[in-house]
Image: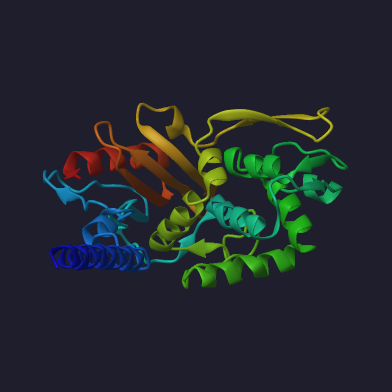
Length: 308
């Protein structure tokens, strides 16, 4: 009888062990089929966008006095206006026009694209990079001439070869302006010589500048002090010198574009970083008697008065 009880106990223990194994396997299978959830705090901290630090005025130096008819200084990262003077007044913008010319070209052309310069392109008034009739050159090199030397012959060549005619290109410029929300901006040519139809406000030019600076190629071009570009066969050479004198100043200026006509006066959009901060400001003047001196004064004033 004792033997019989022992056998029964042994069978019971084996049964219990098997049951436990089955339970363990079921539990493991259940865990493997459960979705793997990362704790919320880990997800929240991963790729969390860091909000730009707003600038604060810490010193109250008197507001700058300028001859410019319209002025705007804004924080590049937050678009906060630091200083403004007649910011919404429509005024002729001269060659600041070429910023929109560049954007429209890049909407339709690749940087490696090649175009042929026509004789009419070389007869354009204004600054030139001295293109030759029949010359083949890349879109990238024409954009460098456009924004570094403010070359009107580059603007004409780009406009004609992008849209087939200057009229169609100008229509594309005005369509682009509306797409960007620039309701007080208008264009009459891709160069900036039409003072009646090429106009904007410093506030909208600030928005236009920010769009240009989002493009990595244009961002590098507008801060280039000097360079040389060539035709596709390498035979024709075009030295380019930037028209923005502040690039050679002791300020940390990183672009972006100059403009001048008799009616528009001196125009300038400048991007600058502070000496002790990586934060940047955009300073814009329209119709200034001394655009470089006044813009430099605005930049210095902004970094002395504000901290980030």
